[in-house]
Image 1 (cartoon, rainbow, N blue to C red):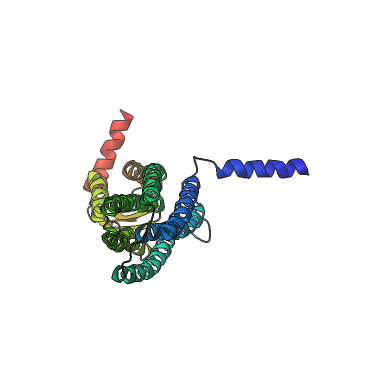
Image 2 (cartoon, one colour):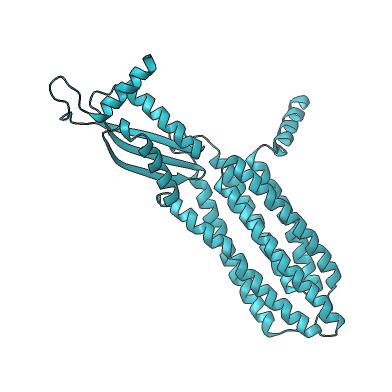
Length: 337
């Protein structure tokens, strides 16, 4: 019994540190956020730097976002089933909206606090050297996490990982602003302008809050579009139409294309008219070719080809005048030669 428990624990531990899983990157994101948030908030309060304190608060919000993202990734990687035929990709969109809403609420409160502090600047004898050392270390960790999340997002084609990478990118720019603020504070304190240093620190706090709103607002818009099943962007639509145009000789009429995105999956439904005497096998082969062409461009796409038969009015007497049928027959002849 002890051996079984030990084996289960070892299996879970190995799974937790499985770097090939998309869940691992969100776990790493959460761990680093926890470290940066805890030290940043404590140091900001202890040393009297509002900018460092707010930066720690932003990291604390990122922890909650990481927890939400971790849950969403665990759900979205599940395969489609009888209950959810299109999969669980919309968990990603819901998590982005939830994380963005949380960030907006807390940042609004933090903005209010920084505005009050801005109105009452008082000189504080903080250790700017200690704060600068922590800020520089934080910047190195943030840049490393951004690069790692970008790599994982490209590998697994998951928008939620792309969103998390963008958060780390914005956090890195914010940290650069905090570093510049601290260096300025060091210089001003050496010149005995401590009050001005605190004033600039408050202004920096407000600035990083406004800058931090960039990603959640953009991510919320994209997530909302996915939840409302809005068509994918024009660039993707034109590329799909380009593939259809390459196969125009095989169809009688192009009717429409429907697209929607759910997480990493892009669902593409193409509606065409084929010659009335096309067999199921011919239609199936045509669909396979279209699918291969689409998946070359979008590996996570889920294409479907819906076909109806033409009325056959172009087929008179014993001759076949249908251009699509003529083309299909020509292709068959080439294959048999």
